[in-house]
Image (cartoon, rainbow, N blue to C red; front, side):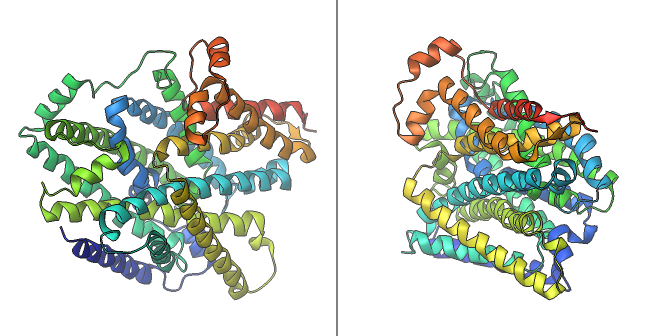
Length: 500
């Protein structure tokens, strides 16, 4: 299909988002931007969060991973279920009881300003790296399959997409994103279902026949009971549980939408509804990966895992409308993960770092500060995307989860220590523990999987022999975040004292 025509659909989709933003952002203020005036519809929030949680990385990387790791990713999804139950029945009541706008305000009331700043800073660091990695993956696909053919440079593509996102988020914030995320999640899920149907028909079979073919290839294997494997079932389930708690329950972007719902009960219904839909959608992404590999094997198509989906979807074998559906679904997956990230980073920096809610000044002055912060984060996103382009490594989903295991560990430790104990912390040592614990977790991970770091960071540390002796072949997987949280918790226990 013509790249010009595909690009015109991208522009049309963006104009639709602008229309939704204009309608929803009228008469908005700082409270609308930060917390949606606490009037969001819980059903819209639950549905829209699917797009935010999955993102463009899931859209291309989860199907692409099926060829090498079957359906093992669903073990992580089962862990998500346990984690979201903790969020719904432990964290949500806490946030509503304290009437929080930023969830990191809890750390201030529990441990003081140092803990507050530490929690907010680790969120900002993790969200910048994770969101820009997701953004890069989708931009590079649009660049390779559409914009390179139009002679548009990568730097222009990145700049225009970020300007698009800025235009529909800078005014309404959360109030607008609740609606745009709902629209975009719909686009992504329609694309997912359409492609499963199209590829199955191209294989000349039906859904049950496709499952049988995938089963013969071993793709549908969900549980891995090899304890030394990085995808061992118990490790994936535990890792998924704590990833959900940390990357949703302790993440300002995700919880900012949840606590914009009027009542605690509605917020809990939102979380559990979202969880059920998320499990179904993730399974469908794995099914899509299976049928894509069946098709690729049948047609002799060879592509990198992250390129498999776009290579097949935009090939000449399918009709032009299929390419349009893919592009719309792809950008529908992209925007929710980026617009929410920029909005939540703005909220976190304004409230937790600058203390804008405690400052004197008019609403107009505070809005001016908020807009400056919003545009600054957009510029940082732009620089980070260019950095990823320079590195040119597209195997990003593994990197995002690894980095999250390092940066969300201190958040997990801080909140766990605050909720599970009544002890107080020595304020001047909080930052030390938050820095040392991730370094210890990183060292353990490095010893268990030295080849991962050799590949990603291009360093040769000669640790393979040490790894074999210390771990007997055991490799740390998604449970890295739990190990990091435990190190942080123990560090806080060491520097704590009984509450008086």
